[in-house]
Image 1 (cartoon, helix red, strand yellow):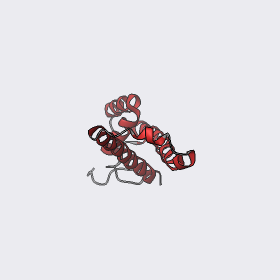
Image 2 (cartoon, rainbow, N blue to C red):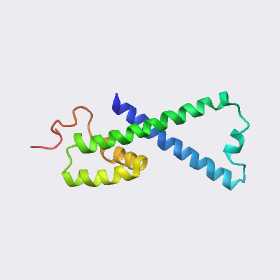
Image 3 (cartoon, helix red, strand yellow):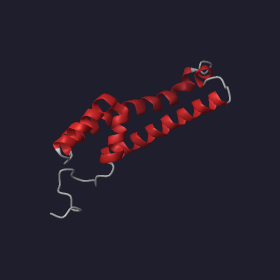
Image 4 (cartoon, rainbow, N blue to C red):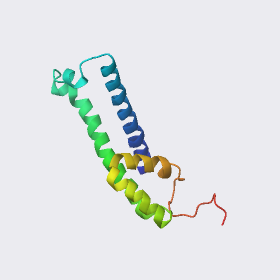
Length: 123
């Protein structure tokens, strides 16, 4: 369940950031007034869905960040120096580091008990 939550947050965050960057490029390229000036005229009730989506992904990315630090420090079977280097990336870069760790390490690990021996590697 937690693995699915991390996947939703990681994919949703990357999608949202990409969408916002694309909108900014479009606004600059076509010299359209920025989106936030249009939002000033909307009522608070109309802005509620956007606020809830932003709050979900804001809290979700924070949980993803702490979860990836926890996974790196305590549950992964990496060597100590690998853990130290990943933690040095995760701690100062927060969201970006968590998304990189999720994509490179966490997502590629088989689900189940993270401390169980890996059956793909012969003993």
